[in-house]
Image (cartoon, rainbow, N blue to C red; front, side, top):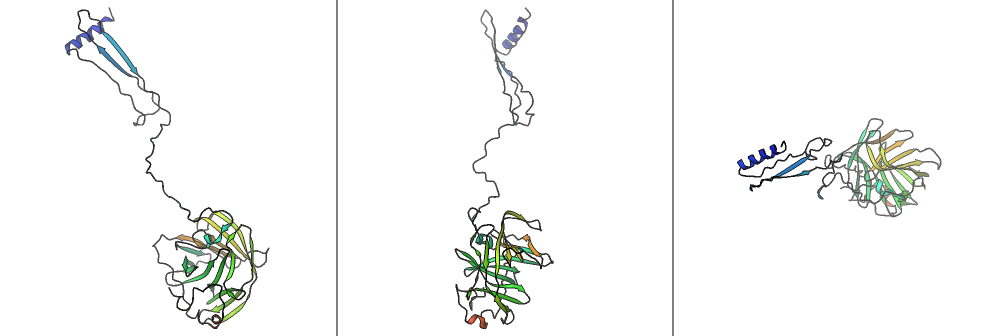
Amino acid sequence: MKKLIPVLLIMSLSLFLGASLVTSQIIPDQPGSGGDPSATPTLTITPTLTVTTTPTITPTITITPTVTPTPSATPTPEPLPSTVIFLPIIFNLYGPIQPPYDMAQFMDSDDGRLYEVQHSGGSQARHQTQQDGGAFFHTKGNEISAEWEELWYTNQFIYRGTDTSPGNGLYYTLRDAGLYGSKWAPRYWHVGGLYERNPTVLFFRKSDCELVLGGTQRSWLLFEAYHPTYTFPSGLELAHVAQLAWLLTPNGEPEERYFYALAYGLVGWSSRTHGFSYISEIHEPGQRPDNTREVIPCLDNSLYWTDRRFERPLPYWPGNHRR
């Protein structure tokens, strides 16, 4: 009899409401809706009450429970749209960096980026690698005047020509066997490689291009190390840095060291007796004007130049040395 009372009450309510369907539902928390993912899931019960009004009243109650599965500790994220792009994207325009290393990649630059180089003595110069007339130039100074080193390369060698930065109001040129330009290093090189050189070095005054000192200088260039990344005293870290050393004997202590970074050019230097320098700041494109290479008016008019022979046309031929 106790069990019939709730049924009769429900029947009475149903008859009062015109025998309408009574449905109750409890909505559980959904994963990812802000609730506690570790909470016990709520049981959803959807009772369906069917009432008949035939002379013999036999109510039927059907209960269909719905159980929400337990969420995992880490909900599976929705897949990202195919158009999402993660930055930065780094493109290597030079191919794989592996031995034998292409020294032109380290010494030359294809975008003329500007950067500051600090000397241990306190001075600072803005550097930029520039291309002109088949050669490239390591410039050191600013947009008013910048000293420069002239280089070029073939399939086999890196060459040097003229350098206006030795100091004391001088510049010098290099020749091999009477031909303008000297082989500085192999184009493709392995770490540990040692390259012997014996160029003719001629020093001239910038003021009148008169010869001051000349002679041959035997030396060796050592490919000391390749650094996938290298951190300079400024705290700046660059990728792909080649470290070379200049020796006066094959097994001697380096007189100078040079650091060349991929796509930059010369970014560091040290001397056994004259301190060291290192890259200290990198300028954004357009943030500073390009360096202006210094002009030596008499450079192409000295007596020395009148009888020289060429392995290649000199970029600073009369009329072409001003940009």
